[in-house]
Image (tube, rainbow over all chains, first blue to last red; front, side, top):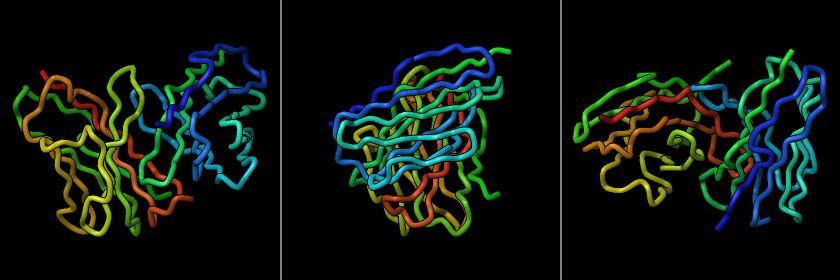
Length: 111
Length: 115
């Protein structure tokens, strides 16, 4: 059974820092991995999707990498801003319809 | 930019009552999903729907739950007789073709509280 874990559970950093969020999964047979942002009490905003054949994807200050064989993905946020404060979720998709989510990393960026 | 919308944003109901949660997926998307997130827990898959049929469902999606596409735009989740443990945030999502390489786009959620 696929298990998705995210470390750290929470992170508090000053504005301007570059930071890395980690996601690990136990079964490397995935089709893709998606990173989401969730603001308190709100929905999920898709940030990046990495196909299993890809190594990384970039969008603005965000860069996500995927090492499928070792069951890891990282989300790199450059030059963090207070507006980046949110919970970041990763989710993997296997050969079914469903996304399997991690528990999330709650990020706070203070001025 | 097209987005998934959900109504209501919040719903409070008494245990045993029926509730219907509504979603309008992104137009021209063909695959629809429901997920839920109990407070403090992971987001969990409930069901996927394609071509007016359930494509896949989880063990959570028992006989108390049903889904329907009553017209060309809405997608609904019905809980027949709510239980306290059904209290959660319910998210609707859609994707264009349901392909394994596609992004699933999520709505803002409906927060359901069962008393």
